[in-house]
Length: 256
Image 1: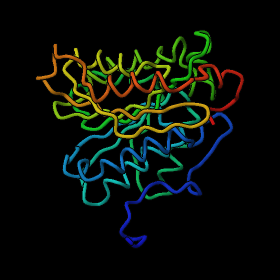
Image 2: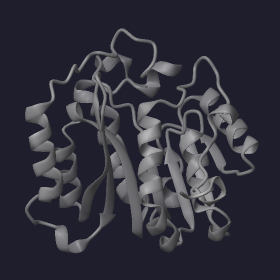
Image 3: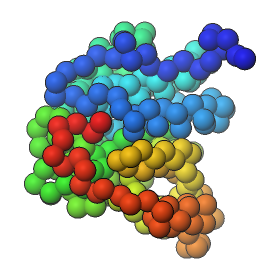
Image 4: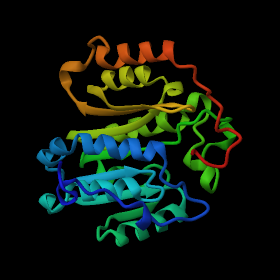
């Protein structure tokens, strides 16, 4: 059995800062970090120069990514954004507590950064607001913005995807958290039309939801092809097996 020192490091919950208006690490955060751990060797061999998180929340994911890449990835730059200023400050505290850092910016997705970062991001991680909610809850101030995803939970996701396409480098990878209600198969088909292949890195079901962490990467051979059966077939089967409680979070004050 591997010793503790041999295991990849991720952010420690006890060192993750908090604020009442900032989403704390939960099942979706852990699933995303587990996907990064599962892809750790590929990430290290990828030699990214710029890693970005859109919607950094508590900083758990971007901190974990920096720790997973480790000292072997010297010269990597990190940038994280959030529409919630409290989240940006909490992320700063979380990263400092772990001895890592990033450029942190209060903005909606990547507003004001697209020209500067176009085609430069080698790894992007996104745990978006994906919960189906009324549209008027999308983008409101405070913690609600961390989960309110509008109709089918897709309002924010559909805004993020074209931004990701513009920011990702030729070798760029996107890791995206989705919920079954978001229709992940359709998301993959949309990205395929833009020239991205995809695969599910982690799938996790709880009593309340079924999460899929999907990895996208540029692959010109996928343009115009039939949908990737590893994604569409899996999701189609999943949709027939899982009774999703789409609005289970609507009355909660948190995603957990």
